[in-house]
Amino acid sequence: MTRKKFLKRLLQASAVGALPFLYSWQIEPFWVEFVQRKLPIKNLPENLEGKILMQISDLHVGNRFDWNFLIESFEKAQEFNPDFVVYTGDYVNHGTAEDHENLEKVMQKAIFGTLGTFGIMGNHDYGENWKDLGSSEEIGKILENNGVTMLKNQQTESHGLNIIGFDDLWSPNFDPMKVMKDYNPEKANLVLCHNPDVCDKDVWNGYQGWILSGHTHGGQCRIPGVITPILPVANKKYVSGEIDLKDGRMLYINRALGHSYQVRFMVRPEITVFKLERDEEG
Image (cartoon, rainbow, N blue to C red; front, side, top):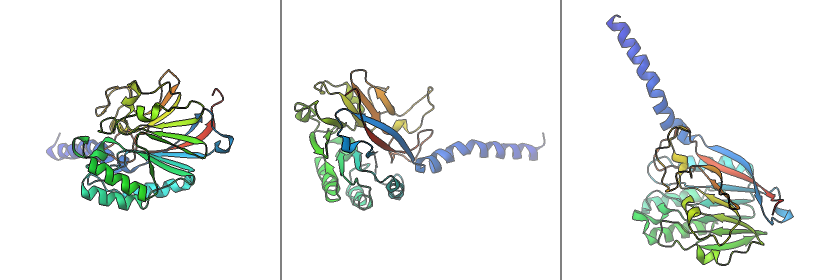
């Protein structure tokens, strides 16, 4: 082989080898997927059957990716005209003053439900070491001022749908029994819980129904069945999508819209579009 031919083939191989890197850095992190699925809920009122509930999780507003992508995604989400929108935590990446300022800009362009919009906190909303209560309080104010009803170990009923929101597992405010002690199985219940590891805690008081979580980002980079290198949960079964907990509880883990780092491979950012239906077994 001549030197010229060798260099040509080396350049070709280098170009091919760079493609996965460029894809995982510049394409997939900004290629949002709208996952559409049904959400059967026990005791759901007839007037809510067929309504749209949208889940958005893990915005991670910060300086590690262009957060205008979030606003562009909200614009696309408007096409679904959701009746309810739930935000399941991690609105910022570090909890700095700059993050808070940029979150205000993002939430001014956010999507809201025609019947109600609700949110819970994630670990990143508590800043450094997940203990900065000042950061979480500032984020709560930003969200409330922009039309999001925040649930901190609380529940609220909206048009017949009872939404239960846990504060984050790793935060100083984690106290799910504050709300679950009053769990009423006769209502049409839905739990919002940022970290799916809470599913393995003894805090559920016999709860039967769906739990909507985030936190994992689906691993961000993954080869299914082979490797999921970044998974910040104790229970490594909690990756993404629907998981039957085999005790009357069903878990759904959203893959996140934002990301801690601008890299994704085989784990596209997600907005989940649920269609509410009555659980005939309930």
